[in-house]
Amino acid sequence: MTQLRAIDVDQWPRREHFEHYRQRTRCSYEVTVDVDVTAFVAAVRGSAAKTYASQIWAIATVVNRHAEFRMQLLDDGSPAVWDVVHPMFTVFHPETETFSALAVPYDDDFRRFHDAASATMEQYRDDVRMFPQDDRPRNVFDVSTFPRTSFTGFALHVEDGSDHLLPIITLGRYREVDDRTVMPMALQINHAAADGFHTSRLLDELEALFADPSWLR
Image: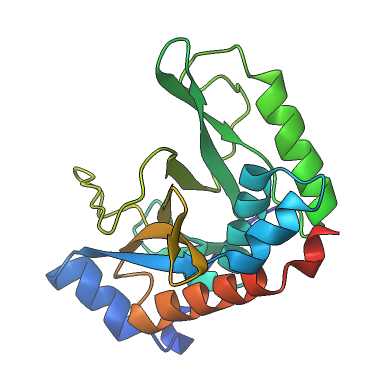
């Protein structure tokens, strides 16, 4: 059973940083980058895999590698880390011009996750409620898309969002840059949970997954 485990702050190297960004300077930061997905796009086209489900698996894989992106506050405001976090992602309903947010349990086996995500999207294809699932877990992080727009900057303003420690990720439409295919990706990160180093590492690891998409097979 997945648990939310308290961090031993007395032994935690980031204790001072966490307390600073929780008690003195509450803030989050946003970064928008172009992720090179050239090899990934070619591999998806040559496979039976669905692009969106594959993108979500890759993102969830690198998010789950690192405790700083699985953090949540306990009731007393102290930091804790989930054993695993699951992606909650948006799907668009063209007939109503609205979206639903769906959660799928993360699985480190790509094919199992891909098939579960695809089945969930199909199951709720005609259900236009914003949150159609009755059994949404607490340990989710958000992924959404601008499916028709390729952006170079994105800002999400969450009112009273300083207690939200999990990352929020937004994807944009592919575009071609110097014979490469890139995907705009915006991340909102709570500074109490992660610094620039941690976010840079996540992005490097994600780009490495997309550069070697042998896991699609």
